[in-house]
Image (cartoon, rainbow, N blue to C red; front, side, top):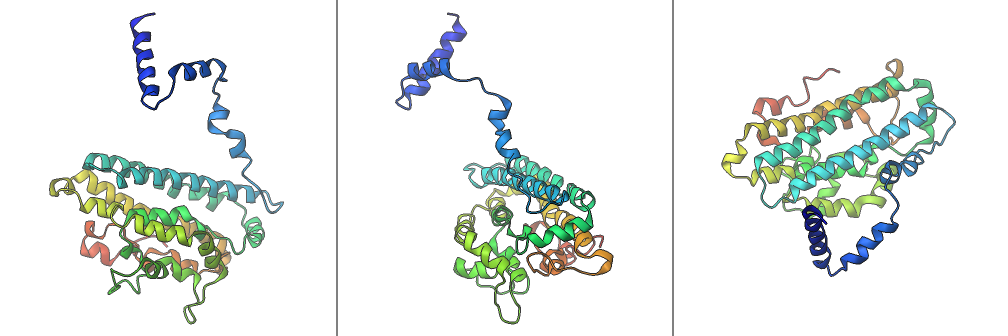
Length: 310
C-alpha cells in the first residue's frame, strides 16, 4: 500500500469515527454499490416526465417547459442568496461573487423571454390559456421569496401605501399590503379574487415566516451591516445595482413585452388568466419596486422604470 492510499484510509477512518460509524462497513458497502450514471445522478427520467399537458395544442408544451425552467433558475437564485444571508463573516468579495451569479441567472431569464415571445403561436396560446384559468405565473412562490430575501419588506409594500407605513407592524399586516396584493383585489371592496385566494391557501403561512426570517438577513440589510470600507467596494455596488435593475426593470419589461404580444393582439387587451390588471401590476413605473434604494441617486429614483421601451 503506497503512502497516498494509507493517507486516504486514515482520512476515511477519521471521517466515519467522528460520526460514530464503522468505516469498514461503509467501505464494504462500496463493493456492492452500482456505478453512478448521468441519468441516475440528474434523475433525467423523472425530470422529463414532469410535463403534463391539459390540451392537445403542441405549443402548450413550450409554455409548460419554459415555466419549469424558470422555477429551476429561481431555486438556483435562492441557493446563492441564502449563502449571503447565512454568512457569519461576510466580505464584499464574497457578496459580489454571489450577486454576480444571481444576476447571470436573471440575465438568462430576461433574454429567454424570446422563447415565449417568438416561440409560440398566438392562436394556440389564446386557446390553451383558457384551460389555465385561474392559474397564473403570478403564483410563483419562489419568486415572492426571492423578493423577501432581496430587500427590506418596506420596499415591497404597495407604492401607494409605502410612505408613512408602520415599520413595527405585525407581519400579518405587512403581508396584506405587499405590492402584488393589488393584482388580486377589488380596489372598491377589498375582496380577493380566486387567483390570490388559492395562492394564499397554499403559501400564506410560508410567506409570513419568510418575511420574518429575512427581516435582518435580506441582501439590503446584509449590505448595510458591512463595514464602511466594504460598503464602498465598487464591484459590490456595481453588482447590487445591476441586480436591482435587472430584476425590477429589465426582466419585468421582458415579461411585459411577451405578455403584450399574447394579451394585447391587434391592440385589444385580453385579461390575464388570473384576472389581474397585468399592465399596472408589471410596469416598474407604477409599483416602483427597488431593492436597494440607497444605491441610486434621487434623480434615478424619481424616474425609475420610465426610460424603458414600451
